[in-house]
Every structure is written in C-alpha cells, then in structure tokens.
Amino acid sequence: MTDSPAFQTPLDPKEQPILDRILTIRDQLSLLKQDKSTYIKSYDVLEFYDHLIEEVHWLNIIREEHKKPLEQNRGATTSNDPTEMDNVLDDCFQLVSLFFLTVGRNNEAPAVYSMTSTIKRLLDHLKEAAFFSPKDLESVGQALDSMQETLRRGSDSHSPHLLKLLENRLDTCRNILGELKSSLGGLSMELKPVYERLVSILRSISAANTRQKFPVGEVQGFQDQLHEIQATMVDGKFLAEDSTTPAGQKVATDLLKRCLLWSDLVLSRHGKIDERFKSTYDRLCDIRNQLEKLSITQAWSLRETDLYDYQRQLDRIDESRISGNFEDSAGNKADLHAQRTLLYLIRRNYAYIYTLIISSEPVSEALLPIFNQLQTLRRCLLEVKRSGGISSPRELYPYSMKLNSIDNMRVNGKFMVGSDIPEGQGSVNSLLVECFDLSYELRFEAEDPND
Image 1 (spheres, one colour):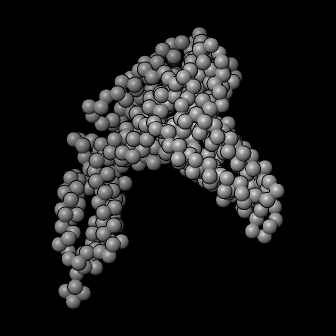
Image 2 (tube, one colour; image 1 turned 60 degrees about the vertical axis):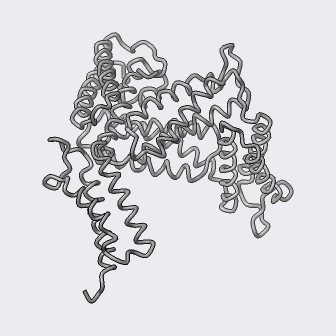
Image 3 (cartoon, helix red, strand yellow; image 1 turned 45 degrees about the vertical axis):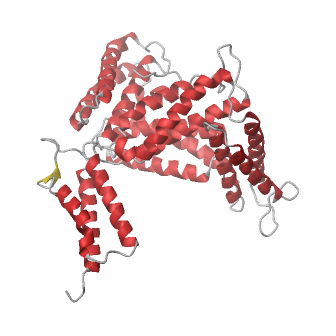
C-alpha cells in the first residue's frame, strides 16, 4: 500500500468495526488498481462505491453524537485534526474517484474528489510561493465551476453526505482562489504583461535549475532578460506608455527583485542541491520525469488510477515539512536554494497531476484504443483539409478503410467488449460521425461538379 499521511487513533471506539471494513475496501481497491490483466468495469467500481457510502452512513450516525459529521471535515486529510478513519476514508475516496475517471464516468460527482484534492494542494503551494499568473487562476476557476456543475447534476443520484463533503471541499478551494485573486487585484492592466513575463522567467529559471545537466548559458540568458526589464524602470518604477505610474508597482518590483536574487543563487549553485536533501530531490525528480512522460503519452498509456501513487508520494513529502521548512535528520533547516528547489518540484508535480486529470476523456479505458485511433484520424483529415484538400477521391481510401473497419466493430450501434458495453459510447460515436463527415466533405470537394 502506498504511503498515506500519518494518522492518529480513531475518534471513538465505536468506529473500529467500521474502520476495519473500510480498510478491507481500501485493500480491495488497491488490488483492483494493480490488476492490469483486464480493463476496469463500471459495475466493479460502483460496487465498491456503494459499500463505501454505506459505511459513511453508519460512521455519520456515530459522528453525529459528537456533533462532528464527516462532511464537516472539509475532506479527510485536509481537516484540522484528521483521525486514522479520516485518512483511510480519504484513501478510499481518492481511489474511487480515480476509478470513476478510468471507467469514463468523469461527469459524475465521485470523480470530483481527486480533482479537489489536487487543486487544494496546488492552490496552497501557489499561495506559499506568492507568485502566479492570472492565467493559472483562470484555469483553476474554470475547473471549479465545471465541478460545481457536476455536483448539481448529481444532486438526485448520489449520497447527500458525499455531495456535502464535496461542496465543502469546493468552498475551501474557492476561498483560497479568492485570496490569490485579491493579491493581484491592485495590478494594473499596464503592468500585467511585465508581471506575467517575470512569472514565466522565474519558472523557467527554476526548471533549468533542476535539469540533469545545468544549462549555464540558458540561465544567464534569463538573467539578461531580467536586466533588460529592470532597465526600463525610471527612478525604480515601471511607467506606462503615457509616462504615468500605473498601479501595482510593489507587486511587480518585488517579483523582479525576487527573480534577480533567484537567478544569482541558481547560477552560484550550478544545479547542485545540498547533499542533506539529495534523496528527497532525486525522488521528486523521478516523479516529475514519470509524470512528464505520462503527459506526453497520456492518450495511449495513462490509467488514471496510476496517479494515486504519485499523489500519495507527493503528499508524504509535502507533509514531512516542519512549519513549512524541509529539515535534515538533525533538525537543521534547508537553505534557501534547497527549500525553493524542492518546493518548485512539488508544485510542478501537482501541476502535472492536475493537467492529467482535467484532460482525462470521459471514455472507458476499454474504448480508449478506438477513441485514440479516431482522434488520430480526425487530426489527419483536418490537416488534409487545411492543406488544400485532395485532388482525387482515391487519396481518401486509407482513411475510409480505417473508418469502415472501426464502424464494423459496432454491434447494434454500440462498441462491445464481450458482453459488456463500456462507458463513453456517446463520445466515441460522435467522433466517428465527425470523421465520416470530414471524409465526405473532402470527397465532395474533390469530385468534378459536372459528375
């Protein structure tokens, strides 16, 4: 079992039988996650989900006696004083949520849980880092709105306890997002391009700092860009085109100073981190490399449940900090370079997980090979159309043969796997129709009008 956050004793001895049953559910979910011999079926996931919700029902009856029902905890490991029960439940809900994504039920309430966990971690790190782009916040805001809509649609089909729990998690994320937006509220439109460029440079320097071979010239180039930006200032201030002083000077100038300090520090270290934190650094780099590879080959190789192990490893490293600081075995704090480098890697890895989850297609992994082939065909047909079309219908034969072979796989209009009808039929059929339409348009344009 992958590491979970450190836990305490149960809140009440009456919870022990429930905890034992939930531990069994977690073990079974873990075994299902590891089984790559066949695709995961919806009814297997729904069975575990129903058992879990039933245990939550009994747990809430006990918790009501203490005036602390589960849904008031803001979501297990993010509560102020998590118990062992809270942490095991968080494991189960994380796994169930990722299973819902794996089987293509992305638009159902349980699928929201893992996303709220990742967004909460990401927002906490953005707040701690104290620099971010307005585009970052916009993306997160859109994701929260989409999840809110998912909860609204599931209000009649899912447990009110789960829905309330998810609502509270969304509210927590919105509150942090609101704080971050407020911190940029005083930044004028004139200074936004400068600020966003500084954010981009700072991130680029941090990325270069974690390369296997340190790119000295590249970092010096970023530093030169910073000096160019600094040279545009007049008396220590950024000016607008009309020579006025736009609002948000402190936000922009503080970030510029931070960028200059960080570039000097990174160049002085040449990508070498304090040996005391080398093992943590190597673990984070390894996670980053694996997630980066998944982000490139996602459509063909990602099973969303695989993200659980990465989440838990990151959570464990993140929660090992003492009052926000990384410390060695003797209790000595990390220096500024090591601290910022490790935090950058944690933040980058959570960002990868966030991107992988929001780009997950609502298609069962059983249908993903067909879905991916159709996406490739669609891209090819669109490229042919953009490049001027075809000169003869014969050029469409390879595409037509592939489309027909996929179409012939359907049984009564559905793609079957044995006797099962996997989730995502609508998405796959819609993509198939679009490909046929593109092929027809290209053929029609190529045929002689007189014919």
